[in-house]
Length: 227
Picture 1 (cartoon, one colour):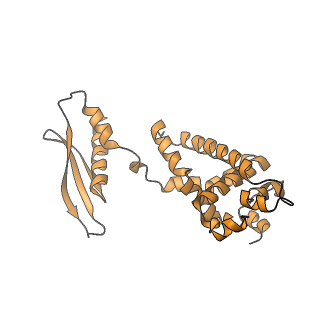
Picture 2 (cartoon, rainbow, N blue to C red):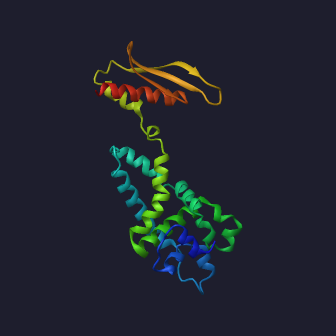
Picture 3 (cartoon, helix red, strand yellow):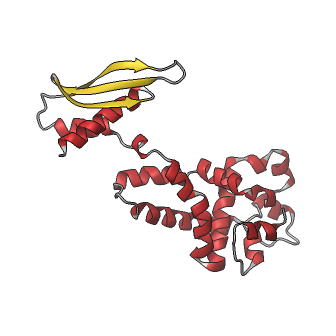
């Protein structure tokens, strides 16, 4: 696909096409084409990293219900780590425009996570420098916001630790978990757990693994104890 048509596909209004194209010049390509390429995308990558950190932090801060600082950190690490950024490059098909040196091309550099992650950062940096946050927001909606919706935040929460901390005012007491039933086929089981304090059942949980069912039991107990 032609670069201009690709930009139109995502409704990206560009002022400086050369700036945007610069985001796709890997250092290996710039080193081999010094007569026509003055710089690679590393400075744009630096800017893009800062924009990503700022955008994701603000996005997570504004979520309702509010997310704790600890979980904001965990979520941001999932949303903007190297693997995630490389996946965003693949989703947007940025690699088709990436310029690499011959050595990187021969070593399949267009599919390497580190190069694709750097490319995404450089592209975001170029969009920001070219026109501020309007174009950046369009891309973030297609990538980070979409990924956030798909993340199960319960997987981030250590409800078992929180429950133990809750009851630990009496250090003689401790909670324990019991699997009370297992059902379903071996490749897709369902576990039901209860969490107890002495002989008192505090909560009950269901999950696709023992760990997940115990986490849900602890969550259920915390919700009941907080009422």
